[in-house]
Length: 427
Image (cartoon, rainbow, N blue to C red; front, side):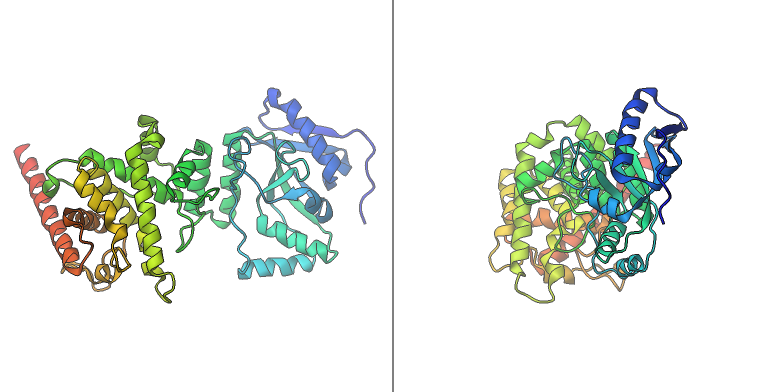
């Protein structure tokens, strides 16, 4: 049975480092929250509001009945409600996971869940002002149990008055309870930076209109922030290396790390604020989108060919293709042949079977062919292949793959000699 409601005026007690400029607004929001959700703690006459020492974000921890929680909560939460309100920060529900099925069964058996992280923000959603940031699977389990008349108390950690940086921090720390994917973390970081990368990808066809980046890399899914960054970074890396000495230059694409702050990407955005209007980059993006489309179309009705169908989105292939496009940006004839790869008749513009047979004598026994790995050697070989293909524009053939692999190893030997000679001269 519920405890009798305390009729004394509710006291809001702030605990920890408190910003007086925020406290009045936070206190108002807390009182609104208490009036709407009737947390169990309010019956004592006092709600304690804590301050995160690192970010100064304010929150309270309390217990709320499922009926109140479900009536006014939502998992449809935006990381940037002011500028990018249509794009979500949460992961998608994993409907068929055994742990989720167990969670729903526990809820029906009167399990009281804890540590559901949310933000009370009526300005974002007046009808459902409690946005669930961490715990969307538990929220769904609670909702389904409520439909079966199970109305238990559940523990919430509710934030108030978050700014953008605090909101990102809460998203990250709450999602790490079930190991937030690196791609989701990248998407959150990029959302905070602004919508430019997403809009660029939508504009060139790498994302559909209104489509967001994937929260995890998987075949057939949306491209991830990491893929988009890799494409743009390597286009400019290729331009930087462009010149007549391809056979002696170190033409090595870069793959940015996933799930970490990328200084390389941040430096590029800062030094080239006009990249979103770069006509050459836009054209490269559109042409690669054409290659993805053509590769998928070649295998759309063939069973057991998902690897070949999604071959263009192997990050090593994407990085090498973009690097080559940048390197050839001042060579109109070869660039046209590079872009023409997607138009090769007969389907399978990347000639996946030829790539699969490509192998060097130094490769391990379990190497499955070009375009199956992402290491520096794989990326370098692919640049050689795309550069060779652009010489005549006749498409990728088994012979061309073999020559590209051989040329890569010859070049690496020459670069090693140059390095050793330089070291000798400096002694």
